[in-house]
Image 1 (tube, helix red, strand yellow):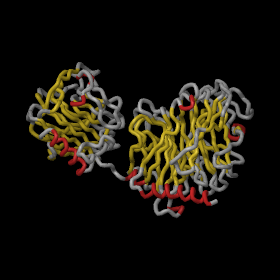
Image 2 (spheres, rainbow, N blue to C red):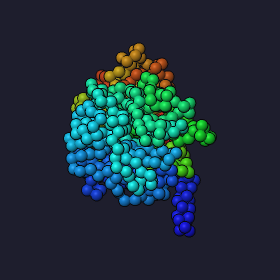
Image 3 (cartoon, rainbow, N blue to C red):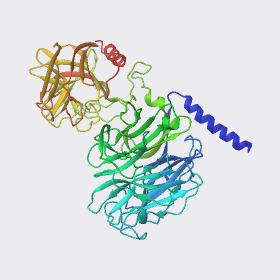
Image 4 (cartoon, one colour):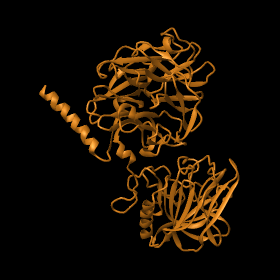
Length: 611
């Protein structure tokens, strides 16, 4: 007994210590591709039991990384100290080769302590997209089955699987599977587990299975949306249930509201803040005034990108999901599915897929607190150099970091490291060695863009989100109107351009809304090196030269309706008038830095290049 009390005290001290570290963040890789001979671990599910045991569950995809059909089992690791240490990997659903169990989701009944693990069972050769109608026969070999196992001892032992198809599957539906991650329990005790459904016509929907008798029986609610996929649920303070849904074609999350406990829903509405590369996400209540907490807070995680599964981000809402004013990048590189849970002592657990080259190299457990989300990290390191791991540093290029021949460009020094090559597909591009005040630069000639990421950087510069770009540039000539920097698409752009006599701020829109062509002079042209800073903060576009404001203008109402992301240096996307200049260094932030932060970066660059 004494030893048990000492161990419990040690666990509590660890949790309390984490709470008082401000901010606090740590993470551990739990499942790594190749571990124990498994090809790929995917589809994380995370939950904490009533006694405080963390359960981390995922697919063990033995032969390849594909979804069902396949040789897939369900595996588990447990932690009794809130994620500090973990048990070995245990297989909790081990099926014969050819059969598969995938996409687990955990749900803890807070009244009984019972833990449910929902998953899809695929007979040999059967997956979501070739499954056939069928419901009452639990041995039907031609349809996907909704299975559930339960544990009453914190995940140490699990029951045999129960097939829920006879209870929840409409006979006409071709397939259904539990949305992986976690279900929820409402304040009135109802259990809700989201499902993705493919009907007889091949149209996909979001539904919820629900139980009002602690999981003894289950029923299926009506559709919360069409042309959608996996979803998550949250109970709002007003008693309604919100479904947060992955769309099949739109790169943003959709929500729908239920007033009857998650059974039926009103129309879906797009949340433009929650950009999404069409992937499973997670939403979780952190606290509620209804439950006696001082504030109502909601958390959301997904890869915050419109173009790729990358940039795993946690967001915080203080107004019941109406807005998401605080966010922080958990992992800037490749990342995909995620599952959140709230831990004791004000900390948060996140189980998510991530990697360096691909998004499914490992399944990682991260633990952090609210201060880590809301505390902005410094833009400058103690040694005075830019912080390469700042979550909003989208790209950082320095001519001294050229890799290989000049035409291949230079390496991205930001932690994101996603944008290493110049974009030159629209014309010949040549770069020659140059120098600005004794430090390396590149001399740009030709018709191609100096560098661009219009096709790979959709998360950057999305109106109305802000941005900050710094560029050390010397203009060598200007025979016409040429662009030094442009956030551009076929619909229009905003940026900095140069004429034979002056610099200009420009905002244009040719379609997608009323035509816009705003031009504002921002300084006389000379041929000396300068630091140009361009910021977009809401509708305000501002140009600084060597740290001094040169011009600022308010964009036309409604923004510019730009539908693609990207950063282009050296060209107008529409006319391809390329700037003839020397460029030494570029730093691009996907947010409007605070004035004090902007000044820190400007001071660093101006001192470095003696400007």
